Each structure stands twice: as C-alpha cells, then as structure tokens.
Image (cartoon, rainbow, N blue to C red):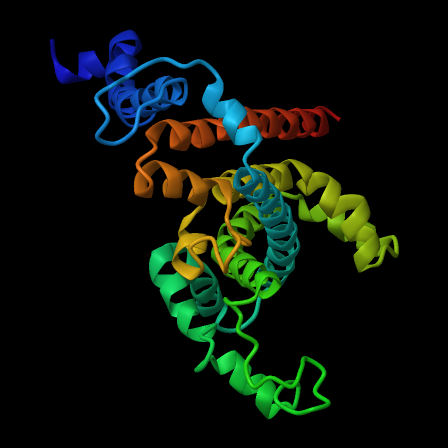
Length: 306
C-alpha cells in the first residue's frame, strides 16, 4: 500500500494519530489517578509494608482536621480573589493591546514573559522583592513616607515583613500568582476580542453609544464564553498550584496561614510520608474541579445558544 493511499484511509490514520495521546493520558494521568484513588482508601505510608483498605477513614479524619479546614478555606480565598483579579486585569490589558501603538510587539513580549518563565524562577525573584530586610518595595514605601515614621499611614516599622505576617503573606502569594496568570488570560481575551465583528462596534459608536455602554451591552456579552474559558483555566491552575505557596512561604508563616490543599497534600504525602492522607487530599480536588467545570461549561453553552 502506497503512503498516499494509506493517508486517504481515515479509519486507519485516525487511530494511529490518536495513539500517542491515548498512551500519554493513560500513563501520565490515568495510572497515577487510579493509584491515588486506591491509596486514599488505604493505610499506606512510606516504609510500611502493611497495606490495608480502610474505607473512608482518611476522608473522615481530614474533615475533622483543623489544618485541612484552614487549608480548604485558604484555597477558596486564594482561588476566588486570584481569578477575580486575573479576569479584571487581563481585560484591561487586552483592551490596551487591541489598539495600535508603537512598540506593541515589545509590550506583548513583556506581558507574556511571566507565563513563559519557570514559575519557580519567578517566585525566587519575588523572594528578594518581598524580603523582610532588603525589600525594594519597602525601600520605596520608606522613601514615600508611608512606613518608617511615627505617623506613617502603613505603620512606624521600617519594613512590612511581607512573608512574615499572615495577611500580608496571603496577599503576597495572591499577587505573585496573579502576575503569573495574567499573560494567559490576556492572550485568551485578545483572541476573543478579535473575533467580535468590528461592524457591530462601529455601528454602536455611530449610534452614539459610549465606551462603557459598548462594553457592558456588546463586548462583555459577546466575550462571556471566552471569559468562561479563562475562568475555567484559572480555576484549574490556581486550585491545583503549590509552586508559588511553597517557594514563598511553605504554607506559613506559623499556623498554616497560607497553606492550600495542594501544598498540604505535598506536605503530608511526600514530606510526611503519609501517602494515604496525601492521596485523599489530592483526590478531594476531583469532585470540586469537576463540579466547577460542569457549572462553567453549562453557563458558557447557554450563552452561546442565546
């Protein structure tokens, strides 16, 4: 059989092209998921040869665990605030980048840079920005008179200790994570804005509709499916992310004030050696993310139909 004849046979070519994807999903996603599912209902720990199925005991223990409850609350706060900021700031940047101006390519490159750079590298850089002694942010605040004097608005201390105080530590983690996700949200929204027919916007402008009227009555309704996709990606990346938290605070300062479920699963399962508890925490993601995905996709589908 000649190559050309083989390429024309879709019933043979399609399975062969899909085979690498199927192998990837089975080996790197399906198999670990099945292992995590089995481990979550067992008593398995590192170095313990005694393997028993203990039912839902791990999940019951988690529900009553104060650290898990706090991590779940932190995850919800971390996720919703981050997503809100990403959607708003991404839309502002997309509006700016949709216009024509000099050095537009350079601005796009700089905005995309946080997404292309390894997140661990970016987070390590922020460790210097948020350092308790040498922070350049604190230096700017001192120069502006906002800290370091008896009557300063932000306090009389010479440094704010960004990663050492619970509220500031959570704000710092959210700031770094938003910085990481804004490029993705911006590019998705730019693609959505480019798909809106210019004739509609021009007709509305001729009819006397101002910027905000066009925004709320035309642009946002037409962008809703794209915004839904942005939210979905942001939820997945935020809910399952531990790199920013682990590099900046490792779940601290004391009392797990920035601990999230992903970092707690790593702490218990990998560092603590309790694979069963770690798997149970990780498996908790599945129904939550599946429910959020179902809700968002249903809303997007309704918007598309309308």
